[in-house]
Length: 425
Image 1 (cartoon, helix red, strand yellow):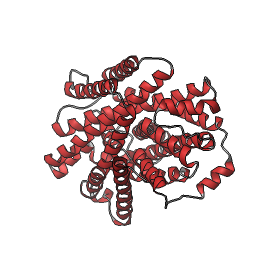
Image 2 (cartoon, rainbow, N blue to C red):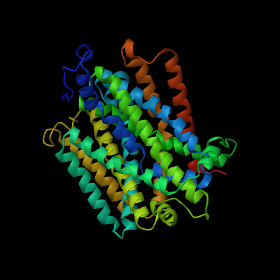
Image 3 (cartoon, helix red, strand yellow):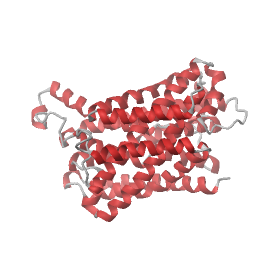
Image 4 (cartoon, one colour):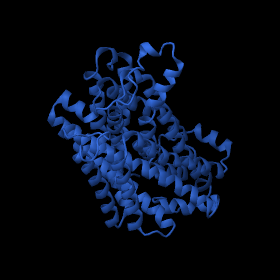
């Protein structure tokens, strides 16, 4: 594995070297921010828009509460990757055996393909807003993803992903143009109708939209591929913390925009697709510029998520099977890695291209991800207890906190999944 962090930047050299500390911090930043930007994917944006349209600002406080929860889960992922130098699938194989590793990675691949369906659905929807046929949108998106990964190093792929994810900042403009009433926001923050089953359903949906199974695999594998070392732990935590705040601010911006417009003037129109949300917001944001900013945000969210989930599948499978799996290698040196990545991308594009009901497809993906959460988070917690050295092991009071966070998150994820299958009243 090629190390991309200067080996001279160790703790003993950093004590009196502020410039060296900045160099280390800048070299470490990336995996956390990228995976968090991918977290605010098309499905998450639709969920946030529905939350604001149906419940105004009453689900806004949840977006704030989810920041530390998201950080707790991904910080453990960071710790495992930095201290062990192993990807998530590889570490499961070494700690629990080949059978458990295959179980874990099989659920990952299914979740990644499912997530790609949602992202490509969003890309098709943006194309339709401007009269672009679905086949053209899908071909351009899939071709761009394959080109970026096949011709770039890890650092270049990371930069492209951050650039695409940066388009999500357009949602802050969308929220500002919606002119939310500060008094209404404060009132919404102060009231959470937890005795309402429909409200609880969206609580579960928002949790499922924030904690994704593929996030764990991607961030741990990206840290290993980037060659980060234990002395970078402090900065990797900051990378993750900043990403957690940014992604939830984006979710909050979408919710605020929907609450200030659709929540206040709802006519009962459905908000299950990108086209429907865009059409509902257009009267308040402007027919041209509003649609453009909203589309840019959706496109950025879809593309960064597509990069992350497809790489997570290729990395995770390679960690269990044993093929070479680094973006530092060329396609001729790691043919299986690039082949799996390309297969996942192309398969996702083909399924979306043939699907007739993208709403039902996206719903099925969300339900599946929610039901996979207990297995993914259980492996994460057990690795934190068993695979780390004593000085970094998950233990004591903090272990209890992490266990509680995982139990609540997984429980609500399953609840949301079951409600999605059987309906809610």
